[in-house]
Image 1 (cartoon, rainbow, N blue to C red):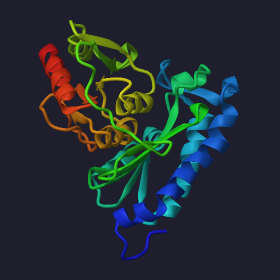
Image 2 (cartoon, rainbow, N blue to C red):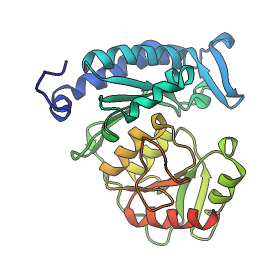
Image 3 (tube, rainbow, N blue to C red):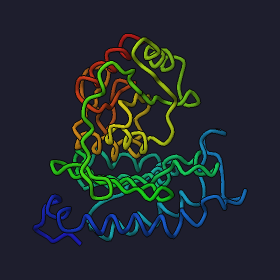
Amino acid sequence: MIEETETIEEFLARRSADVEEAVRKAAAAEILPRFRRLAAHEVDQKSGPHDLVTDADRLAELRLTEDLGALLPGSVVVGEEAVHADPAVYEALQGDAPVWIVDPVDGTRQFVHGDDGFCTLVALAHRGTVLASWTYAPAREQFATAVRGHGAFLGGRRLFAGPPEPGRDLAVATSHPYYTTDDQKRALGALRTAGVAPRACGSAGLEYLAVARGESDAVAFSWEAAWDHAAGLLLVEEAGGAHLTLTGEPFRITGGNTLPFTAARDAATARRVAGLLRGGV
């Protein structure tokens, strides 16, 4: 519980491990028991056949909403499934209360198909600034954390993305064609050029982690949902990376961004990818 005179930064210094434990417990109770064991009645469609939700998504989010709210009284939760049920919930990102941004199963499509490329994403933001993030891939036993100004870590090891290897094609994960409009396809299509190797992304959270680890060079995404981006963007920033929209400004979790946008392992790569995307608009 946050003390009455305690700042959010002081809360994080004291209770980050408790947030990590809440994420682990939600995954252990609601996600992993259903991994590769989902019954047909536990999977539903939202906007279409490529937009899936499962009982694991719903129940893990409910548990995280309760546990995270208890850790930080006065905070609110913006979760993917809660916003699907009531879009007005998303407006909390514009408010003054601390906001937990939750994606209970990022990569639901992979989860449903028995692929281990999914994760739980939690970020804590205040007045539009992401202050901390937790990225947990339970089937891979990977846990990454970041606190603004204090670095990014994977399994206790600090992450430094570093610049790409000179002379090698840039590895860029892009929005999956299933989820892009014709205009977005044209913008992202500008990455199909010499010196760049684009591919369709999997779980956004794990793509951001790959950039923070220096395993991938950049992402280029065409949607704004804060639960997909907040945790990963801070992870990349704290590993030394950068993110830019088409206007040359950093991505804002509160919305109103000019899309597509990129996050990359260093500022020079972010500028290069953003320039290519701009040329395709």
